[in-house]
Image (tube, rainbow, N blue to C red; front, side):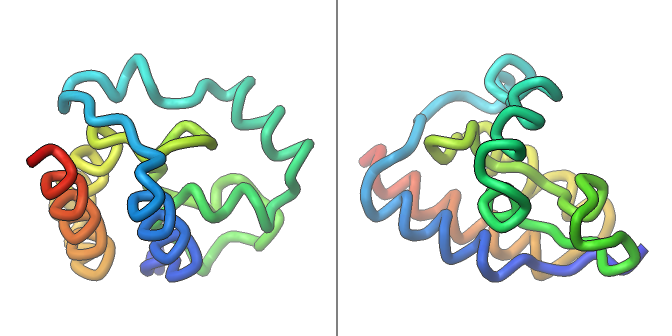
Amino acid sequence: MAVRLNNRAFDHAKRLVKEQLVVLDERDDWSEHRPSAKEENSYLEEHGFAGYQVWYLGLDDEQAEENKGRYKFPYGDFEKVHRCGLLTVESRAGQYKYTDIELAAAHLHGMLDQLRG
């Protein structure tokens, strides 16, 4: 699997953080805050893959562009960046040695920590 950083998603997330469209939650909250498959499908239907992909920090080049399986490492709820989502991305990307994604998530995590004070 050739997974790499989705720069469009990284830029989108940075913009959302600068606009303070964030949820400063705890690590264990992601299982409750992560969008369900139904929510993902609804968002995809309304916004298409161009809108959908900016919520995933990873792209799998071995998957077709218009395939949900292409998009890895979600970090938000289609409205806001979630700290718990970024912590999960950072950890999982590190486990799989996706260094570019891990570093992007760590950068965003740092931006959120600055907002927390």
